[in-house]
Length: 385
Image (tube, rainbow, N blue to C red; front, side, top):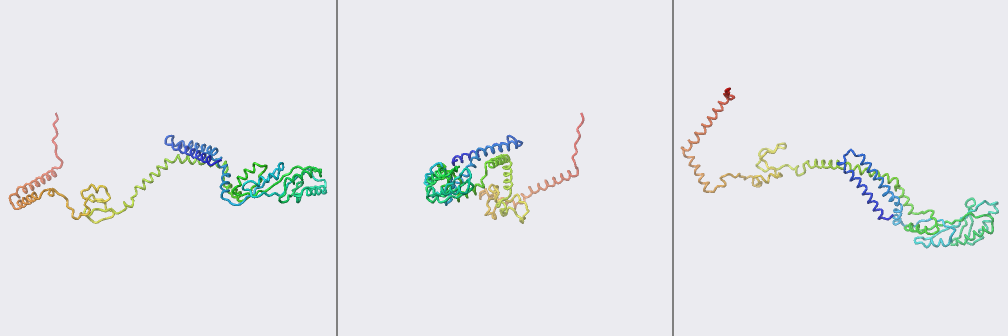
């Protein structure tokens, strides 16, 4: 699986989770009593997405990790091979050696197995001697198991010539039947080219038995932590349930967060915690911490200060409230002062206003006394017709 296919599958999985989340957001319209149906929808969509989208990706993770490890690891790996004796062994080994990244190919010999047991030890000894003398490249014949022997080939010997000699020995010099022959070899390859070499070996008459080396060690270590297909499907189903629950309760969570933020905003900030400053002269008296602010004081931080008539903070000590006389000219002020002085020295002007005011006060006092003595007013009842 290439990188583009993996990206497309991951995008489709994310879209499936977004579908579950958006469906759960419709709880204000479908009602919060449908929680079970929303969770079942998340479970079904999660299991389906895990089976068809994530599971194929997980199956290709070992190959993906192999390519990453091969690019970061130096050294050599050893590939154990089983060569087919039906073809030309010498040609097969030459083909393997010519693959890029293969440093050398080592082989010990050819394994043979006979059908029946020997009648005597003498017959076994004669067979081994015949095999040793059949070809100069054969150095020894070793009995491994019952009726199984290893024909050891000298270093640099011709494997196909040794195989032909074995066939001729069993056909001419003994009555024992040969059951099968096989040959194993070890190819030392570069660690960063193991995957390419394995692909090319499959094209020849070769069976790969095992791969050992630093590359395989790290790959085996990483594969221990990789989940299998069933685990990834179950994980996808649980993730679908979590996404559905998150979409179901997201409205309540958002309202809770907004209320929490509003409560925090109501708390006084650092600027509001500063001691309130009052314009000098507007609030007389000793300052107290728990004293309420009077109506005539002006708060510097308040916006109503801009609209107040007392904006002259710096010159407040010399503050003088404007009166009607401030809008008069100098001539008018002089005439007004002269009239006041004349009224002060004249004896006739004092009698008119002063006599009237006390009379009004006396009359008002008499009316108050009458009202107190009389109590509630009396009303004359209406005549009945």
